[in-house]
Amino acid sequence: MLKHNLHPHLAICGIACAAVLGCGSSAEKLTPVAGNVTVDGAPLTSGSVTFHADAQKGNTTPHIPVGMVDSQGNYKLMSATKEGAPPGWYKVTVTAQQPIDPKNPYAPPKHLIHQKFSDANTSGLSVEVVAHPSAGAYDLKLAK
Image 1: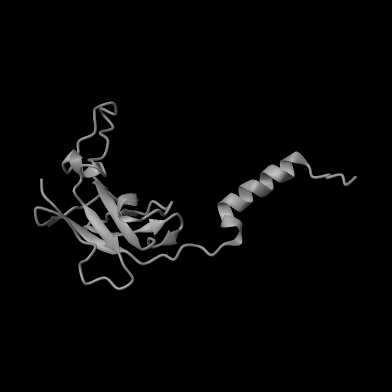
Image 2 (image 1 turned 90 degrees about the vertical axis):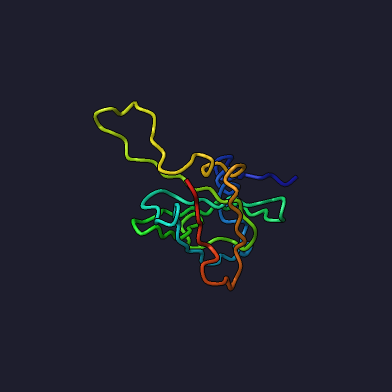
């Protein structure tokens, strides 16, 4: 009779590593994604942009690419620690709030843009990530 001497902690560790590393399968290809966010034609000067995979349009990636908006309204997406996003359709959200007032830290946040843009179901923003996008393909034009 064959006896397995695998320690339970090693087995759990092995399963966790396989989940993180994908069992040696090739990683999803990432495409660079960068754009500009404007509100009524003026650059949004802070905030974040998040791409949510649109399963209804065939995108089933587990990645949730995110980019920070700089003072000129530019953003660049990162998927975990790597630059870019897997190709496919995404619902896009944009959030931007004023910094917390240190004199009143419990006050509700003041949004710099309409709150509808912070929800993938109400933002109305949809983007397809492709290998060779046209100029401005990832620019986001918001209205107050």
